[in-house]
Image 1 (spheres, rainbow, N blue to C red):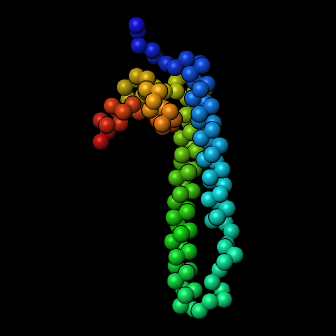
Image 2: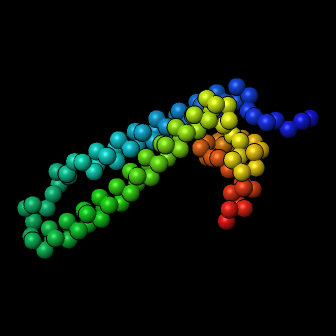
Image 3: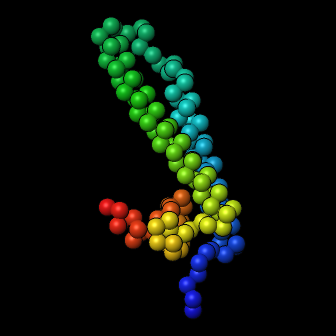
Length: 125
């Protein structure tokens, strides 16, 4: 049997559903992160001692920086998922950009935005 050069339309639809679910979840997570960044907690340190307030403010700054990094990672993940949907529309989804071979379904189910097969990924290391 000859090796397939692309996934069937039915298989692409299965991946589209998977990606759309992950995309919706990722966008909801991003909204939550952005809301956390834009709203100051109601449990501030305004009525506590000055030294405690200084420690709390430092901790809050660190937490906000971490949340900002998480939001940036989430935005990148969303972009990768949207690019995967574009590849589905172009019927090039699942092709390794290095080897040109189909990426196994198991890998795509685990990492639906993957553009490299395991062998190509390991060769990069």
